[in-house]
Figure 1 (tube, rainbow, N blue to C red):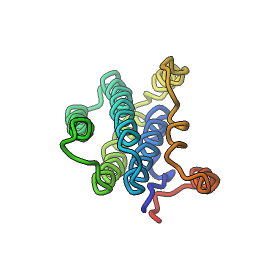
Figure 2 (figure 1 turned 90 degrees about the vertical axis):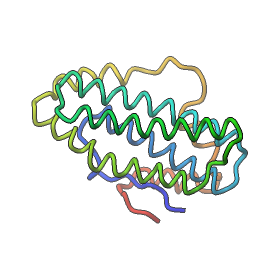
Figure 3 (figure 1 turned 120 degrees about the vertical axis):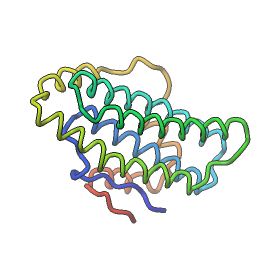
Length: 184
């Protein structure tokens, strides 16, 4: 299985955006692992539900930054967000209703979309935010976003740990520290 490897080249330079990308990449990898191992359907369903929730939250962060700074590509960027969120929601709803099963190809398509979106649209957004001197506003917004979440339930790390094989945990932890985006 090809896992998504993060790279400093994919950083956009805005902490809240970069942290969101890391979280989404980890969830997509967890979904792909769970599907490829034939994990229980309810586990995959929970991961998909978390992906929808976290994707919405991440898109809200980006869209708020685009609105407050007057990003000129906002409309196209938001349409791309709507398309992906619609696709992820459809996967979740189809899975919940029993209409279809999540496949490894579905997970790979999500991963490929994320990598492309970050490398193209989000890099442009990051360049704009940093070039317009919006950095001080970004820092204040990031400080607000980094407050602890008040939601109950397992954290992403706890949820991801449940789909990893125990003997791969140390290896996975080491890999998270290494830059990528190389595929194994």
